[in-house]
Amino acid sequence: MADEIKADLTPEKYISERLRGYQAWYDKKAVVCKSRYLRMRAFSVLGGGLVPVLVNVQDKLIAYGWPVGQFVVTLISLLVVVAVSLETVFHYREQWKNYRSTEQTLGHEEVMYRARVGPYKGLSADAAFLALVERVENHISAENAATLSVMTVSAEAADQTKQRVS
Image (tube, rainbow, N blue to C red; front, side, top):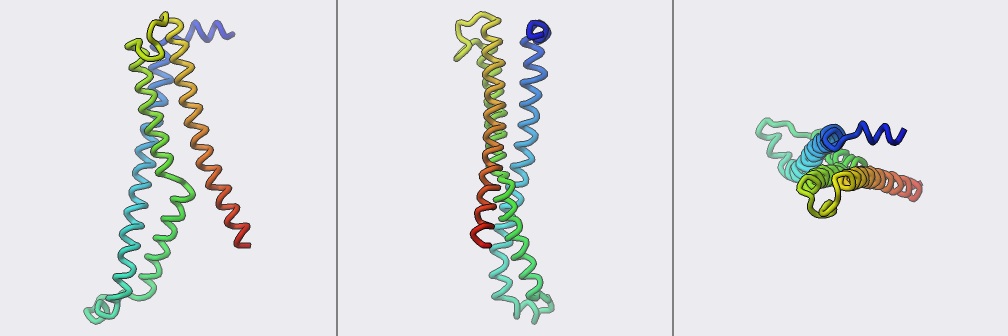
């Protein structure tokens, strides 16, 4: 069975299907996480800055016909708290960095493999390919572990906070 897999798995097939497939997936996830992180941060900063201004100029705005009540200020404050809290749950910044780093690392592995430099220098074609597979799979596994660790640590911290409050 293992010999059948090895015979069917050529370097070009592995690179085009597995390595580049994961690169594309990590790239897509990095873009999504970065976008979510930046939107949440921008909203938090803008909303957090807007609330004290609205509180201080509320009477003047009402006098000019712009009814900005406590409800609006409270709603903006609540949305800022929700955005900041969700970032501590989903860790978009950390995920974005992990995904982008892994995507870049996989690209570097392909270049080093094709140029036969770094860990591939002086290896036969078969040995270089086996090293590529091993290194790529280790990078993918390490990223999975890093993401799981970030999500697990945040869940454990939330549980500890709940227990202290109770």
